[in-house]
Length: 232
Image (cartoon, rainbow, N blue to C red; front, side, top):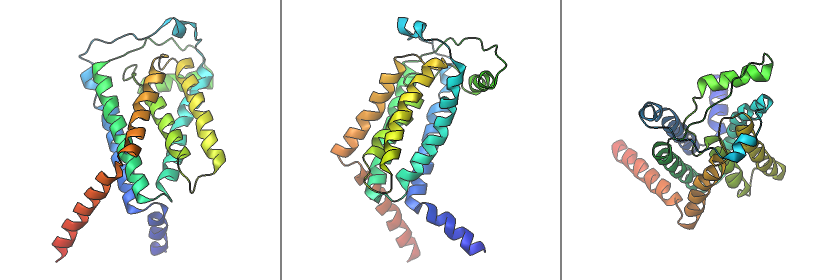
């Protein structure tokens, strides 16, 4: 029974995919959370425009905002399962570069936003207050929701195996819904959307042009080489 269970867990993703997933999760957590103490000492910037003032507050859109986390998990599993190792390493390198750019922008453009009061007692108002409590109104430029959603669509649209075509189109549609949700829930302002797209798109293009997967393959070869020497 134990062997069967272990086989199922190991069979879900290859070992190198688990390593890439762990590296991405750790890096994104550091970018999002480790910058908070630093931002407390920086002067916040208001990047809102007249357009943002015309967008109404609609708490029901928090449903899309929250569901995006589940969408990213499903997409990541599809991206890490059934793809060639070189493709996984290239996509991982692109996303790590995206996170580095995001980190730099978080610290050099410390944008903040003034949120509205949420007096309603309905479920969506409650959920919005929960989001406001856990997600402070900083680390806004670019929007990580936009970054993740755009990255998921662009990368999964470029895959040729293991992903249904309808799911690729769903990712594009969901990306557009995410963009609307961050504005309606007043988690971001309009400029956070194009900045998120740009920060995600540039590393994707560069990784394909200059074959960034070679860095992952070289690192893997070095690690395996050390293990082989230790086993002698």
